[in-house]
Image 1 (cartoon, helix red, strand yellow):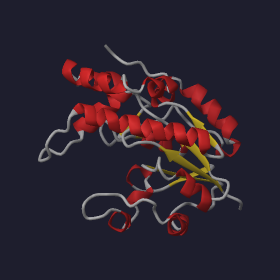
Image 2 (cartoon, rainbow, N blue to C red):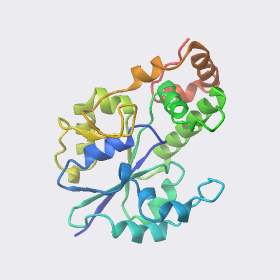
Image 3 (cartoon, helix red, strand yellow):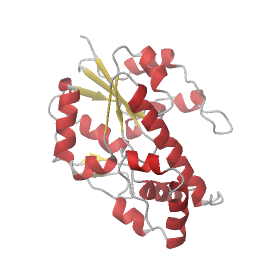
Length: 240
């Protein structure tokens, strides 16, 4: 069987677990049977790829990962999906997975910053919200880079996925007909404020924004105002 590879390129906490679960609802698609369907959650991967200080190696050994993933995908299915925090690795993936396709998916910067803040470990000091917002800007800049340079790529936002699901499904069918029929009416694994459980497709941005105070929103906005071209590229508005 000639397989088609599909990699989801997102920042963490941007809805990629939901998207992978939706793709996996098709009988034509294999997603990894790991927590959040991530290759980084395969046995031994974290110790192999993450240094003691917490820095992820760059570049990663994609030739080896090609072989490892093939031992964990269901090769009886034509479309093989991986999701992970790999926005800087598209060109390396493209070299090692012939004919690979990519989905790029950003999320609203305010909701994303809240998700990073909410997941801070209690024993770690809080980081300035401007620093978190700059992380979003850097990720979004990589998303634009990937959209413009990778050979086969489509993109939509987390908000599109949740609020305009039929349109996204049609776009995906046009982009890769081999995906087959997905079932958006079901409940899907997520990794969000809804908890690590199965839920209907739900946009959690409004509740995330409600957990930010005016000072935090102002700090995010000041950072975003420095990069109006990046927010405008994905249709995001700067608050305040």
